[in-house]
Image (tube, rainbow, N blue to C red; front, side, top):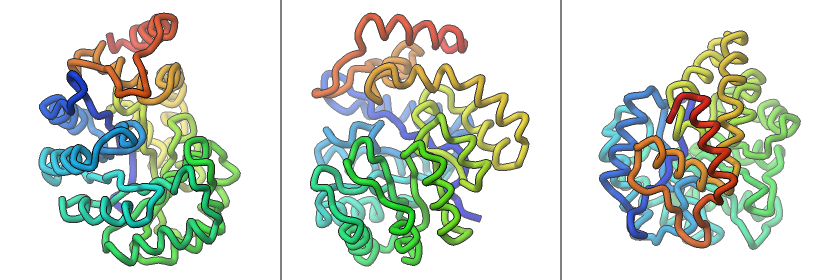
Length: 293
């Protein structure tokens, strides 16, 4: 059975005065492991990978692997819109001891389906580590189509995909076309429960940052076929899932963790900025209603 199952947290990168808060990150990882998170994903979108230097990126990955210490899988973000840079980030992640990498599709340069295929194939051939594709058209301006995913799934070390299209039609087609052991993970908390019920294996989650135990329980129920419990948990979590997107991710998640006392500062890096007062009021209401503050 694949290790890429359940609720993986797309963990935030805490900063203090613009620098990575290493102790804050260690404490967050311990919080997640203590609360049943099935895996940790550092340096993803939620980890503000776009504004981490390569040195910081490497350090966050190394620290996450060291802190997790084999207790849960670590899947490090290692994507880039430069294939050579993606190879270098992936090679470092493997050397650091990750269980897999999460590779966002190339952004900005808008490659064709053949370009996407060749990009991932080149990385897979260069670095022998389990690779999870990451399809998030809202951020990349390209969509890895199901037929391309199916081609890539034939490459031995391309083992899964994080599907953040929020499109159950596309997700169903990916599951239909790919091998049974190919892990399909939801990239949207809203679709995580239905994705598992149609054959997916879990979620890489923003909401897990603040409610790790409940997200893990929802995924466990869905994977076990306990539809009643999975549905009940989905609707319990649903207002919180919405609250995590009152502003650009990860702005609400980081502010929530600050309000919960889990990190010292929830301030993101520019060009992201702190949540506005109106959204902050709504966020506090959602967190309070859930019992988190």
